[in-house]
Amino acid sequence: MVKKEELTAISYDIQGCLFSHACANTIIKLALNTTIEQARGIRAQEIVDYLKTLPERETHCAVHVLAAFGRALDSLGR
Image (cartoon, rainbow, N blue to C red; front, side):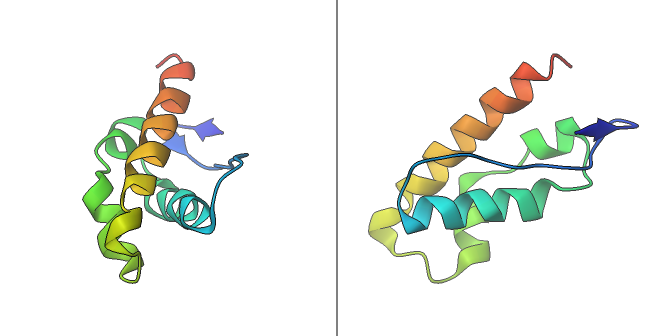
């Protein structure tokens, strides 16, 4: 949900591994109450850094979830 150009509610519905869910939750944490443009600035490495314990072999989850989030932002039409 967007109010006054800020993302005020974010949810997701994915079928993925534990690491994908952790990355999706992290995106929500990082993007909530930011503008769409600020949210577009989130990078996969920020997600990895935030999680700290994400195994290196699972960092692709951050990339995939971030790509899906970008498409969701695109669908807002702003």
